[in-house]
Length: 117
Length: 240
Image (cartoon, rainbow over all chains, first blue to last red; front, side, top):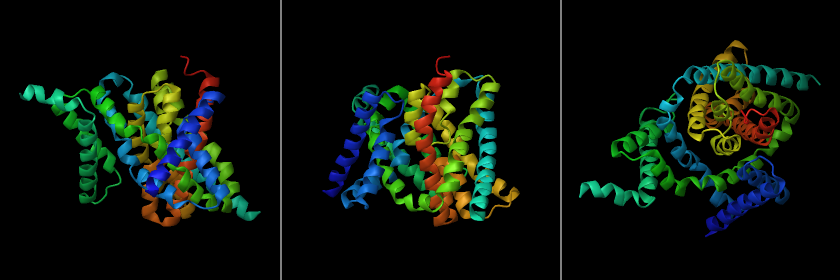
């Protein structure tokens, strides 16, 4: 069962993340710490072990399903948000429009300049 | 007999897990049948379906959520698993690291700040601000950030959906107005602003756009996860 082996890797890195956060007190989630540690480990080894890929690929493919219980929750808090809708919708709509323009404009300018170097 | 049936079924987490699996599979099938519309992601169809079933069964969300913990606990190892595609994208970072390193902190910070600024000006409460701050971050990482900030995860999920769906037409509009054809730039903007939903769209454009979208998504997630909770604590919004 190579996938089980890989799953143990993933769970161990997550637990290591918990330990790091417990002792450092950093306000980061242990998943992110585990992800960075995993990426660093792979960069040091220089390849992706087959057992790890066997566990990681199906889990990543299932991400949409794993977040569904959270998505469903939004339909149950609609009443609590009454009166805040305008602020929320305006923030998401305008905020996303502005940030899309900024990203494209900024990256075009930066890439143009680096090519000119 | 029937009145006793529901409590018997909800006594195990398997009903919640089964309903989630069923809604996910049906949602994906409907999504494909509709020709994969970018404005209606599969997860939104599935979530609507699941919410309707729960309402019909008269099952409170809290009960469902408790049972679904059996699935959501896997989000931890699944987030760690994202380290693998991140490693596989390192060559792209190497190729363009200078413009990306300069663009990412500014663009990712603005993705959060624009929305926070607008919501704050319109009088949104601190709870709301904490819930929408991670709107451009991929869901597994965004959930962790929002829990750190003390926001509402359900509202975050709604914000993620809206942001992801809006990013797609906004990027095509902005690219046309700014006359940008570079697939790397378009892909990066899709992933940075529209997380997983934008990244899926970028893979439809081309594999290069997709690779840069995944890169934008991962880097935004890491950058925001490392700095947003810290910035939040310093500014003291959470204390309000």
